[in-house]
Length: 185
Image 1 (cartoon, rainbow, N blue to C red):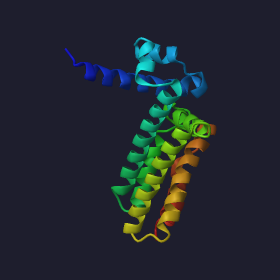
Image 2: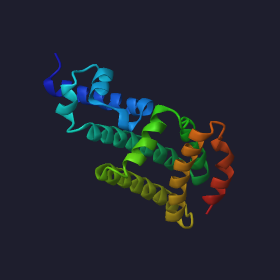
Image 3: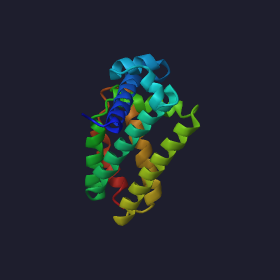
Image 4: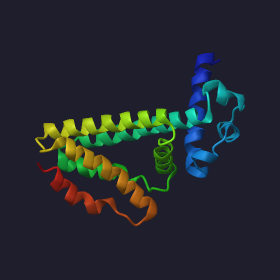
């Protein structure tokens, strides 16, 4: 029989997964305790046992997903030289359509961050760490203006996903050559 702590961790993860999925389906503001509990298959009281509010639950889910997505992007870049890293980054991005639940979770989180200081601080920290890792990678490859190029790449990632959300025909491969020139040093 699983220990109580293991059950608690599993329940918490179920709640986070349920909340993340619901944001993409119904929007940040429409996610309720009842919806999360139903999706997770648990009693609604457990939502507030694990999280002080639905906003805390949603923020935690968004930050957890953003940390994972940024880690994957940074890793994809760092496994190669800058030109090949750009190709890997664009391949990583291709799985986000802009209308998939994960893209919608991030878009909603960025909007909610303007009203929720803790979410804003968490996202800001994650994005700053991503830019630092990218700048370090670029600097190691002798790319000029590594910090500025890292900022540009981070902003481009966000922009590309947003553009794809509005126009599913956006093909990330068309920006590969300009990005490769940007990181050529």
